[in-house]
Image 1 (cartoon, one colour):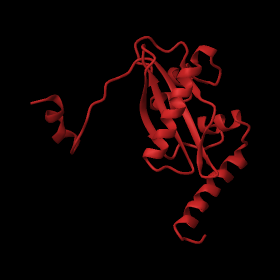
Image 2 (cartoon, rainbow, N blue to C red):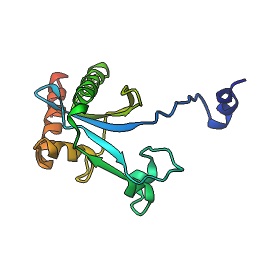
Image 3 (spheres, rainbow, N blue to C red):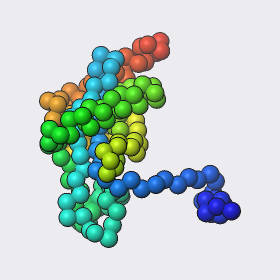
Length: 170
């Protein structure tokens, strides 16, 4: 009996295991403009002075516990060397493919890990990323010259356009 089968009753149902991918972490944000996904400037989460005894990942403490080592050691960057150009383009294309595959609209973020062989792995397709003023999605929009009010307006416009396509009147 596998470890997953042994743990299934304890976890209350089906479960799965993922392999940890050590490497770089990226966020690719997309916003719908005129019915099409537009890729915003990519962000890399850099693990600066991250504790050596911890896996480099953006977990709960890195996101929400401001006085934690993990929070202080994960920093968002929009600055890349030219050598990352093809990798960034590849992740942008994968992100647009995810958008189409899952029939997304409005806005979304695709999170990646890139392994030691420069292969991008999709960690998640976030169809409702945080859009609080200090969130990474909003920072990516700002890097593209889209202010907060305009960003929220674009998201609302695409939602209303989707409702009109479905014959629902707002």
